[in-house]
Image 1 (tube, rainbow, N blue to C red):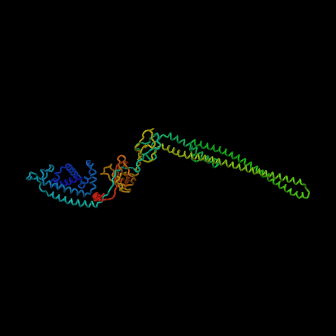
Image 2: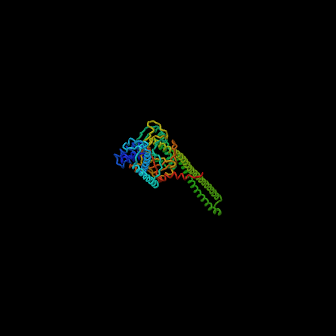
Image 3: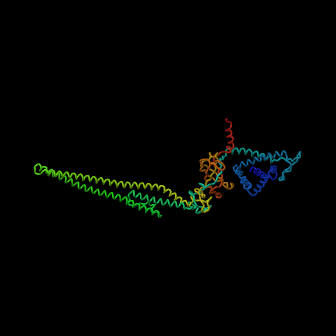
Amino acid sequence: MLLAAPALWASYQIGKHGKGTAAELVSWLPLEPITALRDSLLARAQVLPSNETVEWLLAAPSDALESWRWLGDVVQAIPVWLLVCLTGLLLLVLASLYRQRRRRGVTELPREYSGARALAVNDEGHAAMPPSDSARGAVFAGWITLLLFFGGFGTWAATAPLNGAVVGEAVVKVEGNRKSVQHLEGGIVREIRVREGDLVEAGDVLVVLDDSRTRAEHDVLSQQYAVLRATEARLYAEFSRSPHIDFPPDLLVRTEPYVDAAMEGQRQEFESRRQAIGGQELMLKQRAAQLQEQIVGHKARLEAQQKQLTSVRDETESLADLLKKGLVTKPRILQLDRAAASLEGEIASTAAAIASGREALGELSEQITQLQKEQSMKVTAALHDVQSRLLDVEPRLRNADNALERNAIRSPYSGKIVDQSFFSVNGVIQPGERILDIVPHATSLVVEARVRVEDISEVRPGMPAEIHFTSYKQRITPTINGTVVEVSADRLTDERQGFAYYNAMVAVDTGELAASPEIQLYPGMPATVMITTQERTALDYLLGPLTASFNGAFRQR
């Protein structure tokens, strides 16, 4: 661009003055590229409006200048007035060089400027060029331009705000990155239902594994579970002394033959145990009833004996008066006394029989209670054993159910199949091995940028950023704005290059992206992110190193 500026000026002078000063000013320059570029500019200016010539030059559409695209970026960042001032400064330099060469004199002019004024020959035999008013005007214009340049540049450098930025290489990613599909247990591939590049929905079956081993384990555990649940229901019925078993609903709704067999077996065992325990209790209760009847009989006899004893004693008392009067004999009284003593003995014997019967009845009651207690303890112990076995079998059965369900490997996301690893039936998948990847449908795009460690102090979530997608030509592709949404909590290291960095996730402005249909983003696309930091002036940038040098100077160790 700096070479193009004097060429543009020279072309302008040629167009204005024809042959003359402008041609003389550039005649001594051995720069064929400038001449070629000038001719190209003149040809371009014939078909373009005058105000588009400089824009065409800055755009650099030629494929030959494509490698100098960075130079166009720098020039586009410089104000237009500064370019004009630089052109004036170059004009002043060319004029000064021309005057020096004029004093020395030249032998001849280049051939391409054959239309220039004829040269006079001085005493030394050299060609001398006559004075030129155009050269003086160019020198004066150069000095004016130089003053304007330094004054304008100083004002611009002190007042114009320039946004600082942290620049980092980046890559486009869908939110959450692409997802790898793996299998926990692995197995033998029985069926492959997708291919590379297929679009799938969440829940679609991707690969089906052979389920022979998994199903056999599942069936064994399922039978054990059914037997244990039926046994648990039977023990609950025995513990509560229920006349029948209330099986759980999850068993009643199942139609497998082994479930029906388990429930029927527990019904039969329940009836058998109930009859055995009931028979023992019935025998004890019958003996208790007999003892109760005996006690009732002993009580009746005791009551009769007590009545007889009372009658004998009354008769003895009535005969005692007659004995005193001599109306009865002594043996009669003694006979009544013997009868009373005999009745008292019988009463004591009957009372002892009643006490013995009551004791036996109490023992029978204790036996019945002990029998029921022992039965409850046995049922409780068996119930605890069954429940502990259920605690072992139930999670294993759930795992077997999940493993059986996982034999049909389903897509956890909606997206596109990429990087598929298995393509043949009967292939063996190792536990935890990656099968394929799914790129989810991009509901939102993020750009993952690498920030240098020394720049991380200036990067925070919420800061604005500019994203340049380097896969597209920068001249025709607009910059997309974004926002920093996340910064990694710790530094990361590239294992191959040993480069330390921080990850910064930048959310793309979907509105701007939708307004630029020429931009189609794909995961993995490279980009450059410029995270906007604090504003500084150009003077700050120029004086910053000098200030830092002064701050570090005059320090004694």
